[in-house]
Image 1 (cartoon, one colour):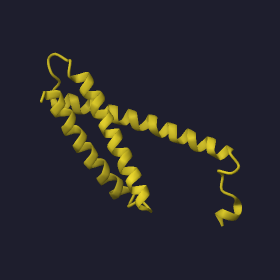
Image 2 (cartoon, helix red, strand yellow):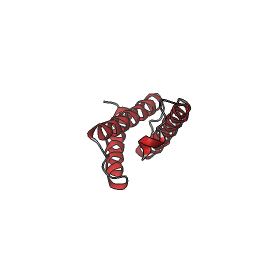
Image 3 (cartoon, one colour):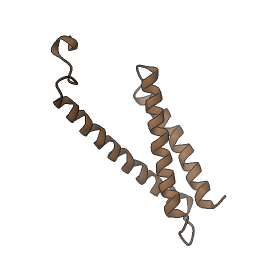
Image 4 (cartoon, one colour):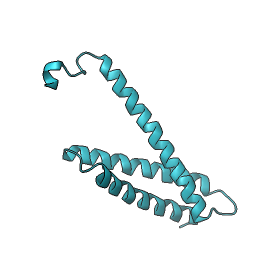
Length: 110
């Protein structure tokens, strides 16, 4: 296994573990099992995609990236993916509010 692959795998596992720990420590357990599995699934995908992108960039670099440089680029990539994903989610919520059947009624809110 190449150095870039080892770095990508290590960053992926570390970021996934830290993200799941932060999710439950700061936000608390999700209200349902479906919410927990969706949150962990999203974290698994986001951390994995960030690792894949960083590996694709780092594998062709000469000299090979150091562990610290790889980790910095990985964190930047992970944050970028999180911002892009949250922007898409926020936009979807805005559009669903425009649909009368998707917006909760006053009777349902009480």
